[in-house]
Amino acid sequence: MTQPEHDVLKAAQDHLWLHFTRHSAYEQSEIPTIVRGEGSYVYDIHGKRYLDGLAGLFVVQVGHGRQELAEAAAKQAQELAFFPLWSYAHPKAAELAQRLAAQAPGDLNRVFFTTGGGEAVESAWKLAKQYYKLIGKPLKHKVISRQIAYHGTPQGALSITGIPAFKQMFEPLVPGSVRVPNTNHYRADEISGVKGMTPEEYGIWAADRVARAIEMEGPDTVAAVFAEPVQNAGGCFPPPPGYWQRLREICDEYDVLLVSDEVICAFGRLGTMFGGQKFDYVPDIITCAKGMTSGYSPIGAMIVHDRLFEPFKDGDTMFAHGYTFGGHPVSAAVALANLDIFEREDLLGHVTKNEPLFRQTLDDLRDLPIVGDVRGSGYFWGIELVKDKTTKETFDADESERLLRGFLSKALFDAGLYCRADDRGDPVIQLAPPLIAGPKEFDEIGSVLRSVLSEAWARL
Image (cartoon, rainbow, N blue to C red; front, side, top):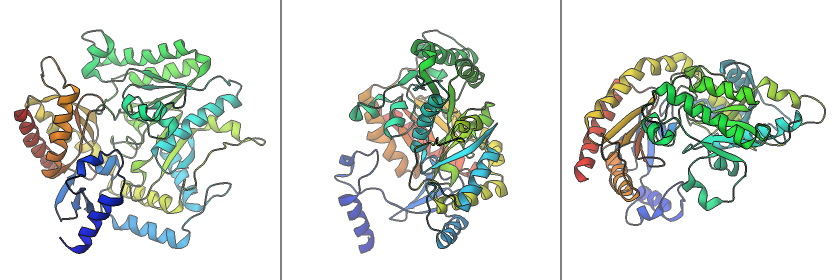
């Protein structure tokens, strides 16, 4: 190990506070340190190569090492490195807003920029509250979201998040958030108490729980429903057929805003630019971030239906909300260059074409006794792990701890695959490679998973 490498590792050990990390895990070992990326692969400080099976964090759509994105950032920084969107505009933000509005579904034509996804969710809840006050419905402030769903870490977004363990240390949070069942059809019998529902039947049942929650809270108090096209936490729950259409009907019936949280699902992750285009629905607000720049510079956005902007066009009304770095000139320039790559290389078509093959690669793992379910969409998949395939018996907390953190996370990484082994619901492995990945990468993912999951089962 060279002295510079040693210095980096020591600096990380002594001074870096990692996100969502148990630092005790690195008391006796070095912190894995990634120094370079190329295509669908990343390299650590010792030169070892890993397949990036999570696109960083559902982010690096066009792959690592894209010189033109770095050049777009450098060019913009030389021309205008920073100026805020507080009462002023700059060309790249204006151009990007126009481009996003053109690609968003329906009449979602107004773009409010943030620096990330949690801020976009926070912005959407604040907008919903103020919008209803401005149109004479001041009691409408509550939001409905789904169990186990993750919507971010700011106080408001965390309140909307449906994962109790993430919230307990930060309570009391923002009041007014209500939880409903999610779309995990694999666990539909347990969730609903009704055995044997088809995906379509379960989808309508789950959507109708939203209507019941609105009625229980009082329709005059509910402002919005937040839901992801494919729910991330819990392991990639796709919507059953008819679910989103029924959700749209319910929101229209009770005058509740439908917010499609697409921080992960937008920008090609499902094979479409936005999630509603994959599942045929038009929300009132889209929250997005991650893939907009493929992670080459931070940015997020709330894309809003025209009618929600109407009350802000007259008099002295304003949305008293913003972020210093929202719509940053460099990030906006990178986003535009990133979207150029999407079009030039037809990444949406590439994902749509290869989705069946990716799914088949993962479905082939169903013969393993530890694999209970494979689910997802596009380049966004989860594998649920079970103790008993017949009864769907899951692992208890201690078993899950030993399985995921005690073995799988490190074993997968050591085998050259970076992905997520998670138990925010039942134990799952999540996969979301860069959108440029294809059959070669799928084969590598399948081979590593088969080997490591077979060893995990043997250890049990």
